[in-house]
Image (tube, rainbow, N blue to C red; front, side, top):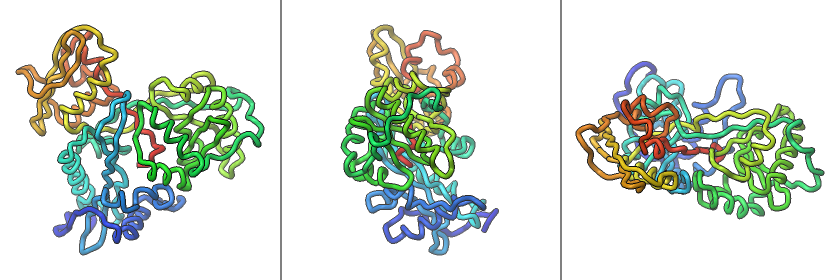
Length: 384
């Protein structure tokens, strides 16, 4: 099978009777020789329940699952504005089926579904060349702060800190996320499952908490006063160093927007970096740009202008307008529209490189620089 095209196959959505075989395929596809075996039911249990099982596209050959792609619908807030979005994950192919077009066919199916559903964007983490062929571009923004003992306060007495409890503390995490302007939005049941899975943990001190995931040293959520959060980070570092693997430090990943967690980081970090948060694929251009205008409106109070963008693959043309400081996105465009393929549009909408790479001649003082790119933040805490 490897190296050639399989003539007969079926692509369909997964159903609950497929779960055991699907998980087995993913465990095999992501396991590496000599590494700890992967167990998807352990660290992503919520994705294989009845509510989410149908979000997986399967490719079957001779009745056997040989590959999978997950397309998971979510609300995704950027700058306080809600976007219809979807995360892509669990992109896996059995070793013996690689090279036969399995992943290409599955990604095409997922992209068709995303476009038909009208998602404003999809996000994932992965190889930029592979996913760039399907319209994804590196982008979004996250801030990473690294901590060491000498930059943190002394840890509090251990008796004052307790582990984050999924049942007892679900509401404080939900309340925190409800107020976050840049986050993936998850239902209570799914959030509960994430908090319960084996790779999630956290600490509570009074009314403050932090939550970590994926190896323990990465902290993704935190609420409270900067003093309380700093104490919890110090406690977490003490705990991490006592583990068998011996963590060398603690890293906080957060959106590039003011928050109690960021204020804490600013006062105590040892080093920091600003990096893309993942890869993004723009979907329905009109609604995505309309919401980008909503995100940017508070930063634009005057000026006028227009810029037209065309998706050369779908033919959709949208004009972003500024009329005396009021932003909007309207269907249609002018003769001088910028015609870009989907990957280029994704870079314009989400990427970190200068807009001039794809919009040559854009004035330095163009209002569009306040609108794009979107600083979308995909936190890996949510485990897609």
